[in-house]
Image 1 (cartoon, rainbow, N blue to C red):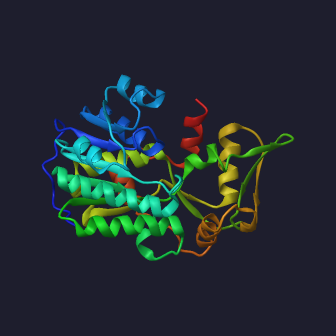
Image 2: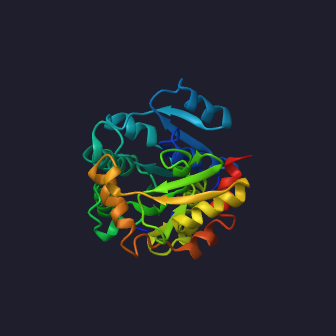
Length: 291
């Protein structure tokens, strides 16, 4: 991995792959708020989420991760690129790795000065979790390229509490449920702050020594998560741990089993806060969601 400083400045265009998703959208927002020209790579410029990025001030460029030539052309002329990959597509973890390799190769051929890749906390520690390992394969390929690279490794997303881990009401009590034993602390971060850390990595790479950072904004047990919701929402709340056996696949089972084997995530919370002084803890994130 080449971590030398790039010549990226606020006047240079930065390409964002996955801009219509949560992480990519947060990166676009963070860069635009700092006055940085953004080129958002999208599959369909007419899609509502793509149009939203265009209205916010991003340049929309059509590209397909399965089309190497379109990807390389879309990256040409950009000073830096942010990328993330997902195993949620039809190709699963293998497809995720293939997309990551394609992004690295296209960035190298296009002469991009810097690549910031959003991976996952623990990717480099041989967790055996399939979608952690697929991201590690991407990291390893990027390390082999003559390309200035920074890895952002987020902990558990606070935003999961607005989706598959969303608390539910039981009478007048809010119930937080996770397949995680009580008393086990879990590090977490908001996608908003992933975007802000990534923006810092793109513009000020020297702020991340060694070219990699595991990030989190809070560390709480399930009981403490429930207490945070109770305080923020002004209603009773409790935590109910669940068995990992209720999870739908081995990937998720391995991940939540790993969470309980401390230390799991090992975020540098001090450096995270240095990069993003206003980084959200969970109570602040809950308040943001209820505005």
